[in-house]
Length: 111
Length: 120
Image 1 (cartoon, rainbow over the protein chains, first blue to last red):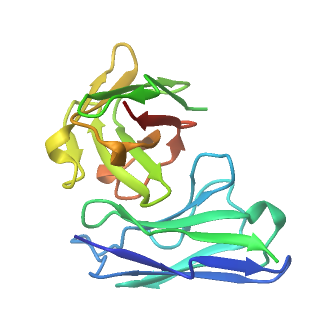
Image 2 (cartoon, rainbow over the protein chains, first blue to last red):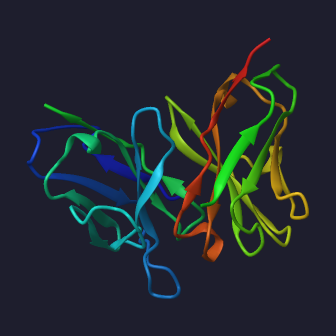
């Protein structure tokens, strides 16, 4: 089974400051087509999850450009360039290369 | 705008079968992957499985022996059955759509979620 490990578990951030979340897999996420199926989701309090990023670095329509994804192989990162109040919530990475599994989540809160 | 709405019993007894449906509106049900995902405080998000509009399915290996997902394209809904439930199956259950590639790129539309509790 592919295990996705996120860090940190909790991320207190000052408004306007950057934030970074790490996601690591215990196997390479490079698929037979050469792509890596690593996606990021945001779950705001009281809301359903929402996809932010798919296939490592592709932002979904309507997602602010302060969100960016990067990485390769087994190490991936979600960055928020300047945290806003609406970014509070839990962030999950999800791999789709070997079945589908989620990371445990990172809770972003405002200091 | 595609909308998904879960429905079904909120309380299920241990050893019985959990049954949920998800109604699709605002868009086509054909040529998409229709998924069930659950959220628990202990395990976070867990993908349960999907049914493609053709009826083909793919399940989480850890749940495969207890799961069945089906689709009715004429009525625009799909369903989840999870048998032999225990307290560990207590969760918020979401239905969600995937547009591509066996859900490899995740889910672009989600339902609001429904809390299901397993208890006698």
